[in-house]
Length: 159
Image 1: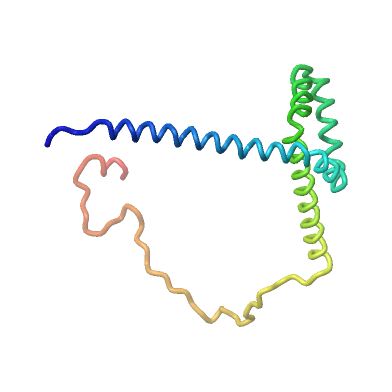
Image 2: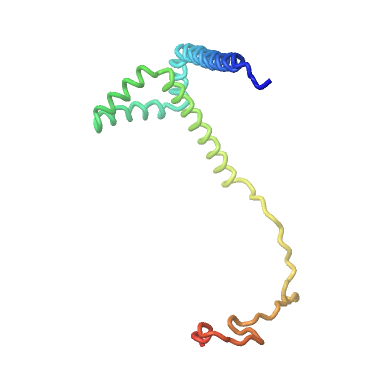
């Protein structure tokens, strides 16, 4: 009974590899579907981003031009990436425009609340606390311990 069947181990290893390959094939098809949808939706997202906050799109274009002037290799690479990867760049600009809009709304709401609204407060008791006396225990001075003699040279050095 000390003999083991080794074919079961080989089947489990092959099954694991097949499942791993199937997992990556599934991820590939899911991602290709997402990019196919983004391919058609991205131009509309750029237009919507321009409508929401045109400064985001304009500033991105200015950044591309500025990067070409300061570092031509990087600038040309950024422009090529923008053209090839527009289906990633345009949704990013859309998300940035939405984020800036939300931050602007929250800031305006906060400023309006500060200017015209009442501020929450906590009522503090007006009773005087002078009548209450705080009693603290007596403290001993450091280095003066009662009943202990200094027997070694190290302790005597500080006196």
